[in-house]
Length: 208
Ligand code: PRP
Ligand code: URA
Image (tube, rainbow, N blue to C red; front, side, top):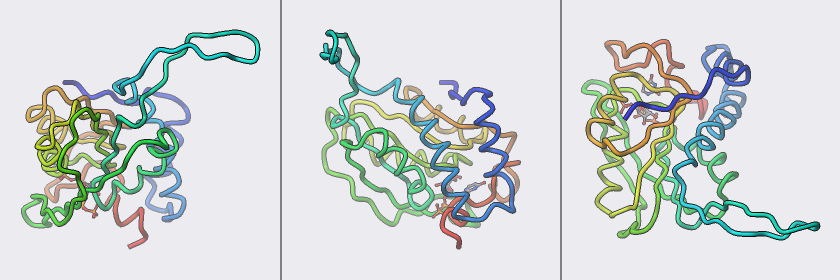
């Protein structure tokens, strides 16, 4: 499946101009990632379960669509995925959030698993995997494999920047999973960094 990338809006360009800039310090970086995260997640909510109902405005009845927040689960991939939890919870305060901890090995670039808080069963739930960076795709695939074992209804990936290599790997392994990104960058370098990218998202989010 082709990734869905945020449209060329002035606000998106402005936010990327700040998060890509190496001079941007971490409190601001974090805040801007959060705003971009809410834009990406808002787009991806197209895949959220919803119901049609009629509500009564103070003036008249009106037909509306309401997302079934409790049937949705957000799963940030630690650490950097934590930067997308606040926007997720602002949009869906009644959705649960579970965590998966993965750390890329700097030499092999393969993700090392160190933690998860997933429940045994995710039947009936739609999963939003949250991670700002989709580089080789190894972490997203490892996380999606862990989640898939719990039998969710559907999975959607939400990221801030993706590399073509990561999109290819994730969509080949999970062809039905929609991929939403703020931007699709040019390539991965020999160290596994997305170019032009924004550097190490986890370090920049947490000032490490
Ligand atoms: C970063 C990022 C992704 C992963 C992407 O995390 O947040 O999880 O790399 O790379 P991949 O697509 O090649 O797997 P990292 O492993 O550096 O951990 P951190 O978030 O704790 O810094
Ligand atoms: N992880 C990051 O934080 N940045 C990259 O460019 C690639 C992986």
